[in-house]
Length: 353
Ligand SMILES: Nc1ncnc2c1ncn2[C@@H]1O[C@H](COP(=O)(O)OP(=O)(O)OP(=O)(O)O)[C@@H](O)[C@H]1O
Ligand code: SF4
Ligand SMILES: [Mg+2]
Image (cartoon, rainbow, N blue to C red; front, side):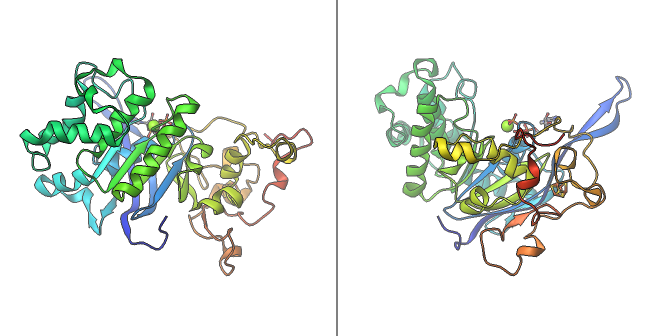
C-alpha cells in the first residue's frame, strides 16, 4: 500500500467508441457504442486499484486498452511517463511485456488443446529474450510452483484441473514475462466463493513477492475490498467516484456508490437491520444513447434540473475541499455533499422511481 509512491500508470481522458454501422453495400456510420467515455485515474507503484461497476459499464474495454489489446479512440495511457498509445514496433513490444492481463473465465481463456507447460510458456515465443529455449521448462515449473501448483503437472491439459487451479495457470502465464503491472479482469468472478478467497490471497502474496501493481476489476464492491488500496466506481463508461478504501466504503458521496454499497451483504445481523437498502430503479441506459448532463440521472433519486444540463466533473466536491476528512475524495456529483442517504428511501426502504 503506497499512496505516496510514484505513479506507474497515468490514464487521461481515455475513450473507446465502437462505430455502429448500417447497410450492406454502403456501410454508413449511424452512431457509436460509447463503451469507455472519458476515464482518468492514476495507478501508483505497488498499489492495487479496484475498478467496480455493473455489467456493460466498460471495465473490460478499459482493461484491454491498458494492455494494448484495443486502441483507444482518444486519450492517453502513460506508463512511467511515456504515452503507450502512440508506440509501435519494438517500443510497444517492450511495454506490452510489462503490463499483463489475467482474464475472467479460466474455462474459456485457456486453450484446451495445449498443455499447461505450453500455455504458461507461450509468452516466451514472443519474448524469447526473457527465457532462452533451453531454460523454458525450468522457468515454467518455477512459475507453477510460485502459484501453488505441482510443477510435475506441466504436461497435463486444462480439463484436468479445477476452476481455481485453472485460474492459477492463468496467473502463472500472466507472470511469465515478469511484468510490473497486472490487469486482472474479474479474476475470481467465475469461481466458488471458497476458492475466490484462495485466489485473492495468492494475488496478494504475489504482489509483495514480485513488487507488482494491480488493476483489479470486479462487478461487486465486496470482492475488491480486501485487496484494493483505492477503488474507482464506473458507470456507463466513466469513473463516477474514486478514493482510498475507507473513503469509498465508509464515506461514499456519489449516489451510485451508495446504492452499490447498500446491496453488499452485511454479515452482522444488527448492522444489517439498521442499514438503508437503496434499490436502483430503471435500466442502465444504452451506451449508444448516454443521457445529457449527469449520466446517472435517469436512475438517481437526488437528480435535479441542473443534473440534465451540466456534466458533473470528477473532483473533490466543493463542500469538502477545505476539510481533510474521508469525504474529501473525487466524486462526479453536483450534490455530493447533500443529504447523503436520507432521501434515498421511502418507508418500505425502497428508493423512489
Ligand atoms: N467490439 C465491440 N463492438 C461493439 N461494442 C462493444 C465491443 N466490445 C464491447 N462493446 C460494448 O461496450 C460496452 C462495454 O463493454 P465491456 O465488455 O467493456 O463491459 P464490462 O463492464 O466489462 O461488462 P461485464 O461486467 O459484463 O464484463 C458494452 O455495451 C458492450 O456491449
Ligand atoms: S449529479 Fe445529479 S443525477 Fe448525477 S449523481 Fe449527482 S444528484 Fe444524481
Ligand atoms: Mg467485462
